[in-house]
Length: 343
Image 1 (tube, helix red, strand yellow):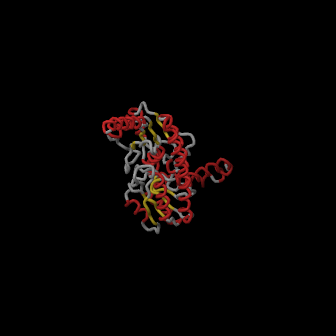
Image 2: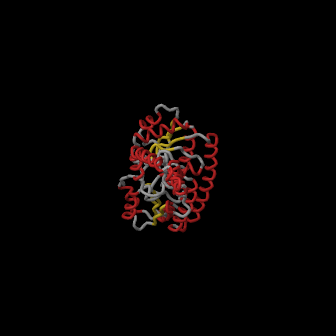
Image 3: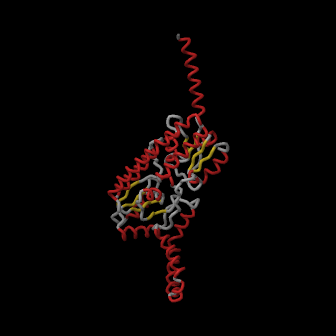
């Protein structure tokens, strides 16, 4: 009997190993997207993460294990070059034979343009002024001197305190804000796309991939209800973020920020920008300033100096959450609860 069991167990192990080996190797750029892929692959396999928790995705040096994950990948899923410009060449060099899914380029993805200025409505006002000038051309001659002096004063002021902002904005690597994973609408769209890509590479498990994606979309629908229930009691509260990374969340849940201390997370804001934000806090009675773990707390303290605003920490990447399928929904819950608690 024992002689029979041994070869049977070996055969089972070999068959099991073959099944595991047939599962696609998947490399994913950041933890929130890794979570979505892990949810679709749940029960079949586990994707590899390229940018480790706590690291900036904008600038990153691949470790040997991460380079190896790209080399061995059958499928690469990443946000896109706007978020991780350095990864474009790495994928082209290391993952030449992999199927690549760039989520910002995917059909159905909601894309938002970068906001400009410390106070987000400033760009819209400029557009309105330009539009008004076109239609009020006759009035320009009557008020030419007045407008010229105002424009000169405005130009001098802008030059004095916006040089830093322009440098920050120039750091952006594309036309669109790349933080698109902070939209649950996008996450739900991507789940189907991920299931489709995995199924193309692994038809035998297609049923599982699509079933997982469908279940995950249901979970996201429930999550949306949770988040609205958390935010509804504090609607009307005003907040400012340190790094302008949250407009997808703001758009999904109709909860707009009043401004950002920094447009980019690549460098600290200049003194003029801090002064502008402080003025906004004082003038409009801003309730909350949201910081992030990687930013200098002294900078946040400078912004809060002399104000009554509260502060809280939020993290768009979920660096302190355990990797896996549960990371994405927990990340979004944390954003909502920390924002509500600050207001």
